[in-house]
Image (cartoon, rainbow, N blue to C red; front, side, top):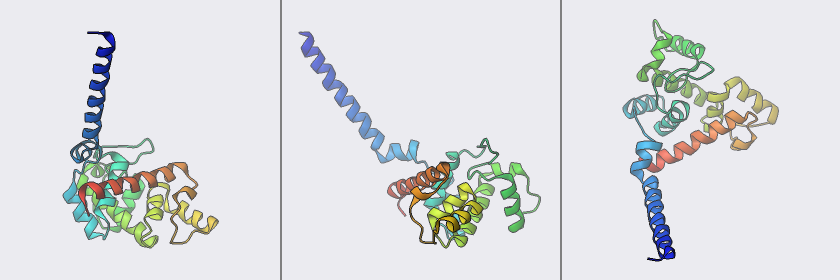
Length: 189
């Protein structure tokens, strides 16, 4: 056969391979298994619903924070699925009357989700249910968000993620909200 014919066959074959790979990548099965998994679903639902939070928002926070790795540790010292700072976790333990709290407890998915959802609930109350503000506070600190609100005149109806002055926090909020949308698409409400 002529080389041009072989080249055409090769190109057509590659097109089919890439089309098949793309279709597989876009499939719900692939997305659920590799990109948007949902381990610890029962714990997430239990604590999220107990705290009047959207379980898919909690799953999105976990995915963004730790990729569902219970022993995850950040360079800044945050620990576990929901990446709680030790001092924040100690404060939460005192608030919920969790006796004999140890930092290693945060590697237990149930403890971490219990503490993390309690903290998200406190932010939800403080920021009147505004997910953008509560997520910004979860990542950048509630004190910083209160300062931004005062400095820039943001109200509880704030919606413009691009106005968040910390790049890391702006990107974090965007990632969590994008993940939440994907979780809604894949797992429903």
